[in-house]
Figure (spheres, rainbow, N blue to C red):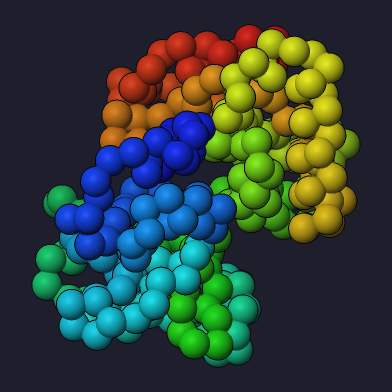
Length: 293
């Protein structure tokens, strides 16, 4: 969807889509601007699915064939049958029950059919990694941040290990990405934390624009970068403002569409990005290298 977002939305209206009842999505969390864009273009319900390889099937979504519920942009929905989902405080393990409190998305056992049972030949590792990471609790951790609104809809804010520590402030990369993707010229974006001798880490953003000509125009790119900085400042505060927003024509992803943020971070810090066998387009990471050189 983010790749298509670069195109003119009028193209969606050129074909007969009357047989399309809904659009079901999975992979990465669906940000609100992208969800709004595709919903307006297609005119059908946009149903996001939040799940993991470990879960075997969706943890959060909307089972409209069972009970019709209206999608909310930016939210995959509510817990599916068989899942007892909770938000827990990362340090104390306390359950967060008030609307819009940020916590770790966890699942209380027992888990439903299809869920992972162990790590191959290493039961102890399975328990330690997945079930004992939250202090004082025996719960399955998804290792994702989330919030829950007053009506029970969950919003995923990114991985717990994708937190940037900027001068003592802990910021989720997903929150910064969501703000940047709301800029009308941005098609897709990736934000990573990069080591900084003064602040500990700073946010570095790489964005694909709908108009690729801006990338080669220094004056235009500086203007758009300034607009994005101002937007993040207004949405999240000055501390969340990226150190730089660099523009590329493609972002590094796996063949299944997952963003390789760890590889981006490694390149920014001058480290070996490691195993890149799943990288779909090698030129994407090369662009990152050129931008930070």
